Length: 190
Image 1 (cartoon, one colour):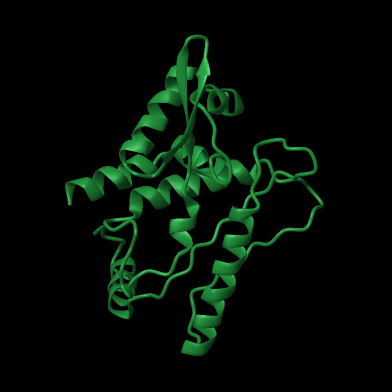
Image 2 (cartoon, rainbow, N blue to C red):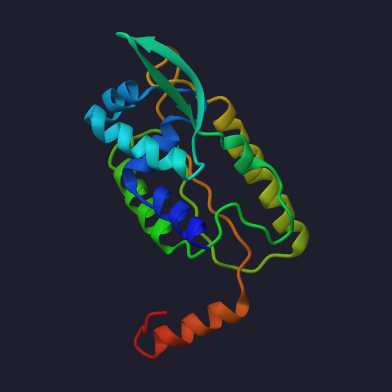
């Protein structure tokens, strides 16, 4: 369980979430990541090492630079888009730290939204039949696969800078009922 917690902590940081997004569809060195995100080289290297140690990044080549060797890292997004065993999670453990970091990252991205351009914001906690749920998951997986596979290096000619986040899951009625009761009683934390 300690490895799972370490992995969750590794991705539960706004800068590391940005790095994972940046390295989807392209491999970059620490120097390139630092330039793109406005970080110091040392800071970028630190975050890349943490992500690599947590198995969130893979080394996707090396290049010789000024007598040294720079590793190029890539986020292997394709493994997140593969169907897994029923009930299996690639990132087990308590997701609250990850979700807090994701919330901050979405807040940061939303400040960069280009006004008067098409986009989508959708949220629902509801009830649908099993067939509809399976269709929704397939469409979301297809859309996610599409943007991940066609992602290009930052500022590539002919590309536009976008944000696409999908979070969809089946809820546990017992947990949802317990949390609703807690909120009605004054919001005790779990």
